[in-house]
Amino acid sequence: MNNHAVAVEDQKLLSETVTQTRLSRSSQDYQQISLYKDVNPLDWEDWHWQLNRRIRTKEELAQVIKLTPEEEEGIKKASGRLSMAITPYWATLIDPEDPNCPLRRQAVPVVFESLISPHEMVDPCAEDRDSPAPHLVHRYPDRILLLATESCAMYCRHCTRRRLVGEQIESNSPTRFDAAIEYIKSNRKIRDVLISGGDPFILEDEEIEILIQKIRAISHVEFLRIGTRVPVTLPHRITEKLVNMLKKYAPIWMSIHFNHPKEITKRCKIACDMLADSGMPLGSQSVLLKGINDRPYIMKRLMHELLQIRVRPYYIYQCDPVRGTQHFRTPVAVGINIIEKLRGHTSGYAVPTYVIDGPGGGGKIPVGPNYVLSQAKGKYVLRNYKGKIYTYLE
Image (cartoon, rainbow, N blue to C red; front, side):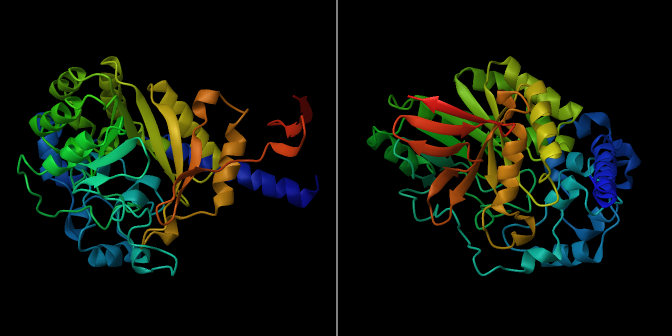
């Protein structure tokens, strides 16, 4: 290795060491933030209080972080459905000085959201096209997506459903899911229902239970899942009462959206422990985001820490070409390289599937390194994770 290559490698190691240090920083004590200095601990732990005190304005956010011009302009332009909403809990995790803080970038609008790429779409997954009834998306033969709400605890800036999600007035009529339930009842091929949104855990326990009861009453539905980010953005919502209610309808599987190791706090772990201790299988779904988790060592650390809190890595998604998110997207080669650096280099349980949601409604398409070098009748030439070549004879 020449002197230039050594210098480059040393600089890379130094950069990664600095980033690792940044990853390990703990959250601020909420009472050190002027906005929350007089909040008592009982209020802080109340998920309704957290939800009602979300940061919605530039003036509030300026009491938490030092805003950049790009952020100020982004907040000004963030209107319509995907407005800004940051839980007080998440605000304590943000680095107030660093605009490249991975949690800050996921939560705070920036001016780049107004730059629309020609190939970006309002509904890149064609969910509206594949909706046979209100609140339903039916794409795959035996499973269905039920959108229980348009609200979330926090509005992530890379949101695929930004056309739907936001602070809109929703009907709380007990009959609003009747057409969806009737559709599921009438299609006996449906054996798997995923309840998502928005975030279903924004609903009250009683609302969630009524919906689960209606689904559980359908005899051909075998598999019930809930998709949520609440254990990450508002872990206080995972209460003993909620968990005990969910246990009554076991088995329920849960997919939780994690993007960065800094999201796995002690408070998040408590929420995941409550869910796992109840017997609920937990899986993670991550979105590959430029400058946030697009380095193999960051993603590897995330996967390892997820396993430590009993969350099985499931999917890494290529960031969908939804309008206003081009500053988050990486080349596909970046995702393939991450899988290359995981497969064989760490536990198989820590290796998720990297997928691209086919634009226009193609569904999840797995993408990964090519380990089959050649193929002939009865003979495969393969490479392993070290690059060594092996021949398999059928």
